[in-house]
Each structure stands twice: as C-alpha cells, then as structure tokens.
Length: 172
Image (cartoon, rainbow, N blue to C red; front, side, top):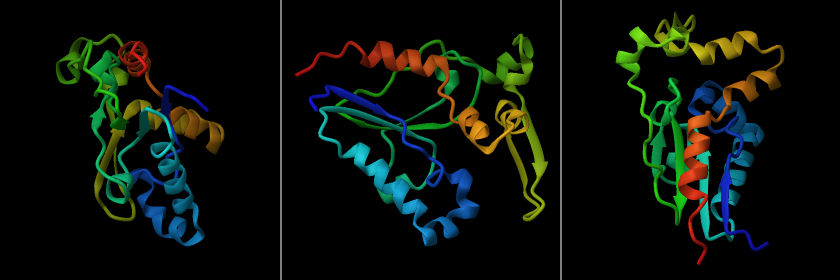
C-alpha cells in the first residue's frame, strides 16, 4: 500500500514467556500458531522499514533473537518492563534520560513505581517477583481485557524515542 514504515505491536497473549504455563494448551488448540503467524506477517510485510515490538517470549526461538531489548527506564520512565524489538532497516533506539533505578529508589517521589511485589508460587514453591505497577494493574483491572490493556502499555519515554528517533528518517 506504499507505506514507508511500520511500527507494529502485535498481541503477545500467546507468545510471551509470562504465558508459558498455558503454552501446551495454546499449541494444541492453534492459538499459539495464530499468534506466530500474525507476528511473522508483520515481520514479512512488504515495507522498507519495520519495527515489531513484543515482550520476551517464543519468537526468539521460532524466528530469531530480537535486535534490541529495551526498558522504560532507558528513556526516563522509572519502570522495568523488558521489551524486544525486531528491526528491518531501522537503527536500534539509543537510550535517553536513563533512570538509575537502584539509586533512584531512595529519592524518587513515587517510590511504589520502583518497587516489586514478591510471592511464593503455590505450585512450584519458587519465589517470584514482578514490578509493583504490573501487579497493581492485575489488582485494579475489573476485566481480563482491561488487565491485558494495562499490562501491554507502551511507556511515554519509549513512544517519544520511537517518534523522535525514527520519525524523521528519510525515505529511499
């Protein structure tokens, strides 16, 4: 359709490592393959410049490792959320306004953003932890759809970096 660039955020519901306990069921009923096929349709689109975003998951094995793994704190947002980028004819994003999460915990005005929720998994007995903002999204969401939307959030610093660093690239 003549697009110069595509920045894609395909659903990660059946691909992210956070859903690993459900992978077998998703493989058997075809949901995981649908997720893979949709992701690959984005990667293989006939567009000159492509970025596909997804969390850490199975695409590193099914397709290839991402070109870059970024964190919101690389771009000024005091949060941790590993985000993979698969790139075609685009440079990796450079870090701007990096927040030092470990030292900033003491001085940050909203300390809850930098803390973790820890628990012992009832099935495995393994200690687990996740960023408090992510856990609170689970608690505050009234529906499964709302929880999914809150957890799939793209943080403002990352969005700004994408817009400013890739938005002005010249078209061949």
